[in-house]
Image (cartoon, one colour):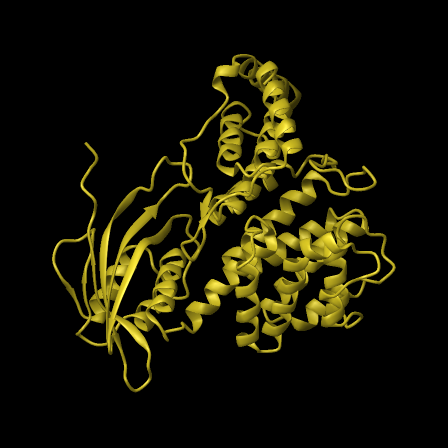
Length: 453
């Protein structure tokens, strides 16, 4: 009976695949960015490598000839390798309408949801893929960019649980991240996979306050492991074990070229930032995380993790020393839906006033403003959401202890949409406490642009 159902399902999928033609290759509306960061920055891909573009064109041709599950996966992967993450997601999504139980398409779409900072959708894809792959034998996954030996070191199961753990880390859910990485260890079949999984598991355990458990997972790590492509993670683990100094971690190494050292810089500095957090030095960690996100490698996992950690740290203790840093924290509070930040960023008591774009009339007083934000989904400590809010065309006029700021606010519910869901003008009135020099928002007035004709 089970075999009959499997055959029937395969025939349905085969028929669906045969009905697709080249004119149905998915496209997405144009935008001048691939994603919006947690701080409201537009993230734009670098110019692609010509060879990667050529491989992508071949993948398009293969898909046009035969839109099989494999060719759909490779078209999406090749689009992502040239920085077209939104198009890759569209390809994977279209493929899932034809192959709805494809754990491979879910694994790769989830990966690219991580790239564009849609952590909730990413976790949902990996969770579903994890269920679908449970009864599947170990499946080696081909590399998009082969390593120096030409031998893949990961498998599909490993990649599903590895990226699921990362999604939970980016959302700050350390318990679920630990469970995912422990499952990932069971699919880590070589030293490269072991060091990659162990590294993130160690970080997760330390962030959860489980220092003893973190030390235990480090015990199998030795300097003599056979590493092909994850040397940066291996070095980071050796530093955690005390077998490499922090200076040696970020400095030249015998088996690492100058180009590799530059490429691995974010990985190394992110590890050092975590070490500083474990030691209670949040100021040093914040400064190091800031340096990471000043770099260009925004699709890299170390960069994304640095961005998420920095946003949480900033909202724990916002920099209120200037209007710009205050509004940066306010933007992060919206992108993390952090209710605690409302009390930190707005003036206390009944003097705060607020005009919302969503509610008629004046909102007066901090308590009423907290209720208003709770209605949008803000919660104490914040929560991961895939929508993004940011400011553009910011202009600031400062006059002693007061400042007036005008800007345009934009709200993007879905990165795949053609334009942000909402936009309009906003004015802030900021006041500085002359005793503490801290700036806070005393008044905000939001409006929506008129509907397009």
